[in-house]
Every structure is written in C-alpha cells, then in structure tokens.
View 1 (cartoon, helix red, strand yellow):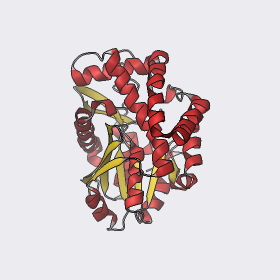
View 2 (view 1 turned 135 degrees about the horizontal axis):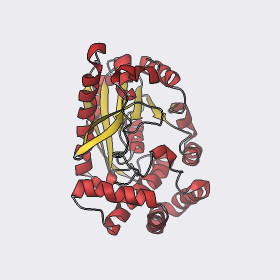
View 3 (view 1 turned 90 degrees about the vertical axis):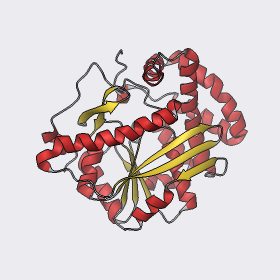
View 4 (view 1 turned 90 degrees about the horizontal axis):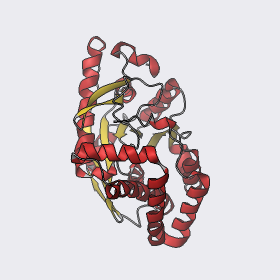
Length: 317
C-alpha cells in the first residue's frame, strides 16, 4: 500500500468559504437541500483529493477483500460528507431532525453516578458529534470533549459560531500533554464525562501496533496511560451513521479501572489496545462506510513504535 502520509499532514478540506457555504445551505435551505448538495461535493472531493481517494480504496480492500470501486469510494466519501453536514444540524437544532437510537446509556449513567468521572473513548467512525444527543436527554450529565482545535480551525470556528457554549466544553488537544492531563483530571474530579477519540496519534505521540483488519496498525498509548493515571471508569462510544437521518449511539463499558503495572507495561498496553481495536473492527464490519481515517492508517511502510518503557514521558505521567 502506498503511503498517503500522517493524518496531520493533510490540509483541512474545503476551507472557510466551503464550510460557510455548507452552513448557510444547511441552515437556510434545510436539510433536504443540503443533502442534495452533498452529491456534487462528493464528486468534487473524489476528483480533487487523490490521497484520500487512494486511502479509501485500500481500506475498502481490507474490508471487502478487493479494491474499492469508484462507486464504493464515492459512497464512502458521501457518508463522511453527510456526517459533517449533520454536525451543523446537531448543533443548531439538537436531535430534533434526527432519529437517534441510544444503546447502553444506563450503563454510562451507572458509572457517572459513582462521582469519579468517566473517560469516554471513541474512534473516527460515524459521528462523535451524535454524542451531544445525550445532552438533550440527560442535561445533568456534564460533558467535556478533548479536541484538537488547531487541526480544523475553519470547522471549529463554524461550530462555535453555531453553539458558542461548546467552546467551554472543549479541552484543547493542541496543548502540551501535561496541560491536557491536568484539565482531564480536573474535569473528572468534578464528575464529568470526558470524551476523546483514541484511534489516532499525533506526530509526537508514542504508538504501539495491534491487530486490525488482518494486519497490525499503530494506535496511541496516551489514552490508556491517562486512564491508568486518572483511575476512573472507561466506556467506549460509537455513533454510527445509518443513512438518511438515522444514527445509532452505543455505549459499552470497557473497564471500571485501568491498571498498567510498571514492570509489565508493554504487554498490559498491548492487551488493552487490542481489546479496543477489536471493538473498532467489530463496528467496521457493522458499518464499513463509517470509517473516516482517510490516510494510510496502517502505515505499512513505517515503524512508529517506541519502547513501552518511555511512553509515560510524552504525556507528563
């Protein structure tokens, strides 16, 4: 598989004008008109974004056993575009325009009731934004989201303009590791649900390889070290897009407490991360077009793994 580069090296798609246009079409033309506009947008990105197109083809080959056809790749891109547009509606109108099935919320609530805080680990599958649906159903659940605001500044500006209150709920992942860890610890001490995506590592992060779709892929170790440090329950969250206006938001208890013994750190990390990757792979097969890592996720040509003995140095623990 040819190397399409680390995800951080890819520019934000569309820019401010395109996002402003999508916002205005979505808000003033309605969701039906907005969805009609997704077809030319999908074709545009298929023609103009060769690295993402190639990454989609190779990913689909892993899932289906053969390279993705142009139609499948465009379906993949369209699914991604649909969830991006729906973020506008979720923030502007809440879940009213949608049918969101929520599974496992009571199990999340049980862990929140312990008062220690909860870490909610997701992945770049479907819509993590659908998580905000629980805000309308359970407004008493405090939610903080770890998000790199510098990676997609235009999208961040658009979303904060739609819902200014979300800025106060974001822990900026562009900070140094120690600041992120302290902000997450403070939120957990206040009993908050702290949500983050655990499938991508940034350029400076330590990664370890675990099995995914037939070979090994690099995953960041920092979420698991943070879980060990904070000693709070970990719950997995997957917000799958099912087409039309339908989403399914699932919460799965993962661990009531993460233990990573210093003397056995490498194998313990591998076990935790492999369990997480197994759930990611499960939902890949449930909804294959919901995979939104449009780059060489497996990084077959590179070795990005560092020894487990030094992983704590990168997040200040």
